[in-house]
Length: 142
Image 1 (cartoon, helix red, strand yellow):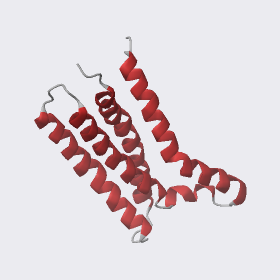
Image 2 (tube, rainbow, N blue to C red):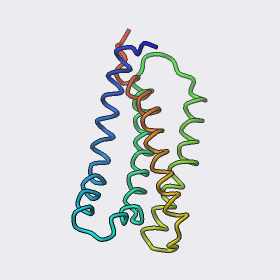
Image 3 (spheres, rainbow, N blue to C red):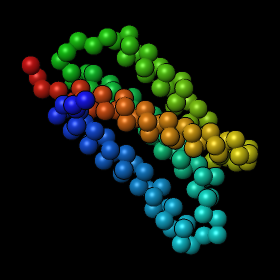
């Protein structure tokens, strides 16, 4: 399947944004690998939840920016449904995991596993929906 030029450019932009957003995690993991006995402590800190919140929020911003700039008519009901799902299933749980881990309310493995799962989901959602928003931003005016 051929990817058009607009989609390819949007993919490059989204990947570069993802790389810079996860750069702090890469640095922390690198430092912990060399200096720490507990190399997995990155997964028991709130860092992944912070980045998940960022990616879910940035997904909404990117989508709305693209839709508002685009000249072609969009199905606003579908856009609102997508944003509602992102907020309810993505953003709010990420904030909950962030608070629980940051405030050290519960120190159970399930919370840390959920944080990792939501981090992966946020990356995936940002890559897909963020790319769509970026493609709308890059649309040529007709």
